[in-house]
Length: 107
Image (cartoon, rainbow, N blue to C red; front, side):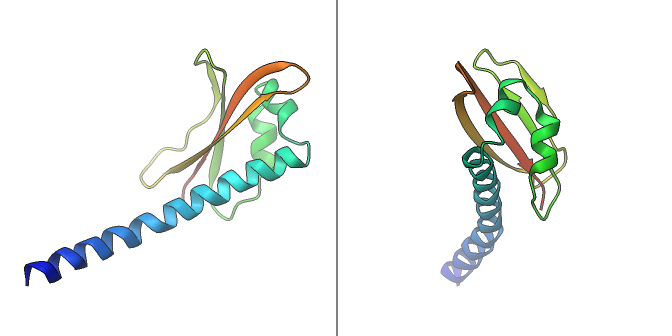
């Protein structure tokens, strides 16, 4: 009986976790696609999080934040519960100027 309860709990827990990882993967893939298309680096280098957010197409609410290695970030984080995040790091646009582009999504 105890094993059945534990297995039920694990199945419930894992089913709640899988969509989040899928959402994170989708968000990361969108950032990667924008980078491949040449639409990410210039906006990230200038901290233009609104431009990046406006061209990302996801079927759920999202926001974008851009951070420099020193820790200064510009953009917005989604509030609430069940918010997933994905990060994409670039080395810079025309010169070495690393940025971390974070996308927050809420299913």
